[in-house]
Each structure stands twice: as C-alpha cells, then as structure tokens.
Image: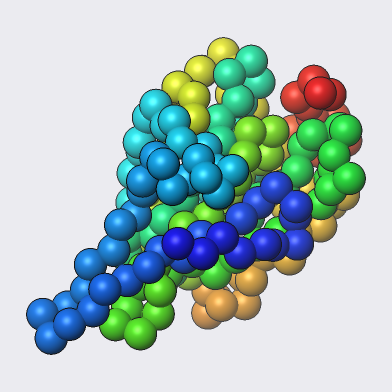
Length: 190
C-alpha cells in the first residue's frame, strides 16, 4: 500500500498493491494492521454506497458532535471528489482539494481517498453514472448533519462543470439550501 500526500496535509490518496496474472488482478483494499502502521484510521463503523447519474453534485456534507472520517472509493464511473478543511485550528482551514476518482483498470491502480473528521465532503459525477463506496469512522448522526453550499463564493471551488457537456448540475433540495461557509457552524477547535 502506498500513501500519497495531497495539497491538504490530513487528506491522503491511498493506492493498494495489486497482484496481476492472466486471470485478472487481486488487491487487499483494507487491512486494519496495515492502516494502523500508516497512521490511518483502522476502525470503521459504517459502510455506505451511493449511485448517482451524470451531473449530480452531493455535498458539501459534514457532521458535528459525531464527525465522520471517510475512506472513499469509486466502484464504477468517474467523480470529481472535494474535501474542505473545516478545522479552525488547522493551517489548511478553509482550503479545499479535489481529486478525479475512477475505478481501477488493468493498468490504473485502485485509489482510495482518506478524508478525516472535521472536513466537508462532496462530489460531482462526470460519467453517465457512478457508484461510490465509503467507510466512515462514526455512525450517521442526523442531528449533527450540516451542509455548506457547493458553490460557496468564499470557498470558490472550481467545479469542472464544463466536463458535463451542457448538462446542468443536479442538486438535492437539502444541498441547495446549504449554509454559506462564513455562516457555517464549524467543528470545535482542537
């Protein structure tokens, strides 16, 4: 397993080691001991899967009280995945990073994205459809659920809407009524 740094100190791209032969390939996606030795979370309590069509934007979601770290991987399709650091004491506070995530091919490695607690998360589906699987470090806590507007002017995230070939983004009612970053209730400083 290779842990790759990103422009946000706490967010990591993870590439698994793949064993290939004439039949195909095998990879170990998660191993509690390996993750622990790499200073990654090794205790996940929930696994979620979403299916979305082209142009869907989900997010920017986060939880207060029971924050969730997320280990994300794409099973099918192509997404543009975004992490925003909401931790007031972080040197990356208010910064975002984005990643093109796709499933592995015969030549491309399997990539996982680790987004720790204290981050908002969202993604845009760039393919006809996409299935996303993510493990979380905490249970879903509806009372703590919060949303920051995907197109918040302060964050100024450069969503690649031009790759949708004229399709308008599809945003849920909940997400379209998210909060501005400057007015968002943020995780407590640690």
